[in-house]
Amino acid sequence: MMSTKYLEAFGLEGKDVWVIGGAGYLGQATVELLQSAGAKVLCIDIEDRSRNFIESLLENSNLSAASLNTRDIERSKHFVLEQLSNRGVPDGLIDLSYASTAKGFDELSAEEFDEVNHGGITASFILGREVGNAMKTK
View 1 (cartoon, rainbow, N blue to C red):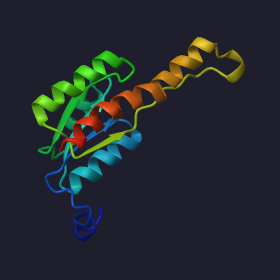
View 2 (cartoon, rainbow, N blue to C red):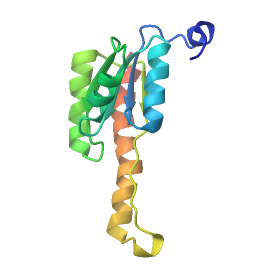
View 3 (cartoon, rainbow, N blue to C red):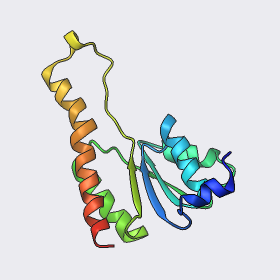
């Protein structure tokens, strides 16, 4: 655990931060660090991963979970509007989502390559733009 002095240097007390991919390996550490620094964290991941992760933590008063598959662009836009309505504009957004395939280079079709790029690049762009435009007004 980091020292209190180090965590206070972040200045995140009461700040609202959304972490996409928050239940993944890197995401869990990020969520725990943000919580330790006093942030209010929205942990976002696919299916029930966020809820299961948050329930596993001993102290989770500043944590909430949400489910989102960022590959669904229209759902992502709707999700952002819902969260803005419920939580207000966040102070930060951390996007750790990604898309991949287990196929090798020679086995990968153009359609599969496009799907991976959509999940890893386009979906992150759309979500970041939606949240970023809201943050500009804060």
